[in-house]
Image (cartoon, rainbow, N blue to C red; front, side, top):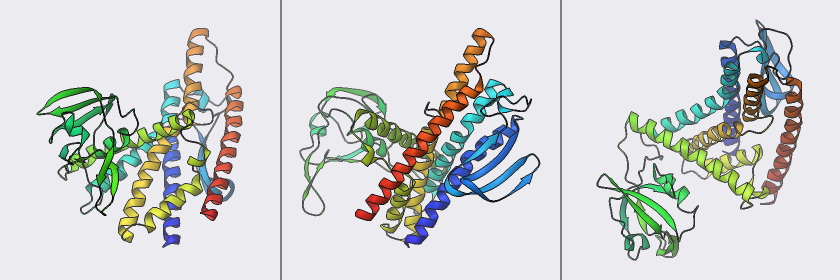
Length: 359
């Protein structure tokens, strides 16, 4: 089944690229900006067609895609150029790609939560039981309490608790729970794991609680938990970046396209059935979609967020001075950053291939 999951992963990446660029394309058309080319993938063009003013292309190298708008990086004198559009129209166009990825992640998770018999259950943060000797019970928590926040970070569902509980100093946690409809605050709470018996006869580190009643299956709950899951995904991206900059994570913990495809393949093959494997891969697809949405909006040159930053700077500068910053300088910065990003992608691909070969 390896080939099947590789093909599925490639199709997912292709769709996420398409939907991202389609967001730019659609809003550019709606805002009256001329689109010269809409391309899936990069490199030499394999095939395509032209309709109206736009060339539609499918290119060789499956590492991206683009929506090439007139005057995107320099003024051309065309009244329908990107640089000639009002600033708020350009802002909408730049944000549309990430919005489409975020929407895709939400829709996929809503479908997974809504599927009858799906293995993706909508679990709350309600405490349903304690193991004997649980430190959390000894400090005043009770069955029926629902975790509301940990160190100021909201917990909407069980996955939030799992993500946040290990992120902070376990000896000094600000904890808020809901009990009988009221919020209770526990200051300097200790959330340390202890050794508890496991199902296989050994022991493992746990908090000593059972957590997560199941929410009633419904359209409203499926959408609500899909939104919660997208928040959780965004947090995972943010914490991953903070770990990278703080030194808690390094290059070995980063993955490129090859590494992500490998994770998808392993996830599918380790599932109990093909149908379960497809659902698990779709879960990863939703995570990747949200990941792309968040990463693309980072204020880094060559990314959409970097372009938004330059747009806002230029808008403020124009408002104060009545002059515009020459867009060619911004184009130079984005081009240089793109070279660096492509170099990083190449390094990650080599690293991923090396680790796959040598594991």
